[in-house]
Image (tube, rainbow, N blue to C red; front, side):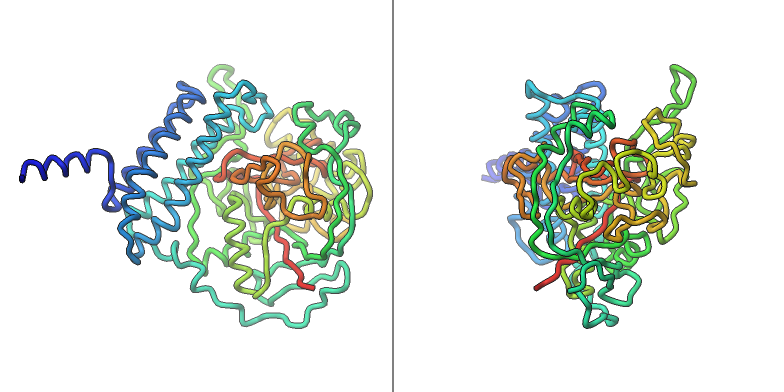
Length: 470
């Protein structure tokens, strides 16, 4: 009988079931190991390995651990943080595996599935798993689990706001973390770009469908949007109070030595060691610069925190809201300032002659100078007609919608576009441009996504919408 029991135990353990945090951390490390060698093995092999390793970890180790329910910090962390991340990784890697095996796999240099982006996907996810694994090993679960539970409403709430007057500026509290908001009235506009615009600005035909067809959108309800992008100072307050933790590493612009040519090349690469406080070379950030190197989920968590602090509802803008605000009742035009590149340096922190001097990258650049090589303090440039700053270039901005490859079937009421019409919700949508975006990527209609929920870049930040109840 003892021999039989021993054999049963050996078989039970050999199939990978988990009983403690060491097995959880080991399982995470195995997933990370499966993410290596993309350059050698390629898309199909690597994403097959990642999907299988992640699925095995979820269905064996993780589910077994979670079946032993308890209310401890370790259990809560693994259930509330590790489990959702593993499920998301499984969905994303399985989707990309299907795309790698598809006849219409898109490896175009601008494609969302191109090799460089898939390599970054693996690095982004590995660093996020690294954070989870290190927390499991250290046992430092608080405040990751309870960060928002202890947040208290501000004692400096500003009462009796004028939310009826269009374009009125207001703040919900006197605290420095409360952003200045602008009331945006309801209205209508036509969303998207045209073939004429694409030809005039030299937009690659590969991405023409992404902002078409043009369609009428009726914004039925007023809302408020941030006058500026969320700043480093405001984000620091969120981190300070909640203890919120983020993975290390971000995509940035680098000058890299080329062994073959003996010259420096400019590359956009995921780089270890970067974070929102140190997002890259030559980033002389002040507290009034936009916070960058944040994921869409980090922006959403900040919005939840600010909602608790103010008692109001803050969130990321919907894509239609963002474009409605940016077009600002000016009719159809390519940029905030008109249809030519002249004036770009007055309204936006775009890829200009200063940026070109710094990065030596052969982009179509703006023939002007603004003295900035990377991000600039918010509000340095002229606002648009609604009084909103930095919409087209400083930091690119996360919006809340799911990604769609075009506007077929898009909602016409300004609402969030979700899973309907084949929406891909784990991949975030970005609008606007940044200091490293060329002339046709800072136009109003430009939109794209990054195929990784863990994507973050020294070029990306966010601003918030505040809902107005009527």
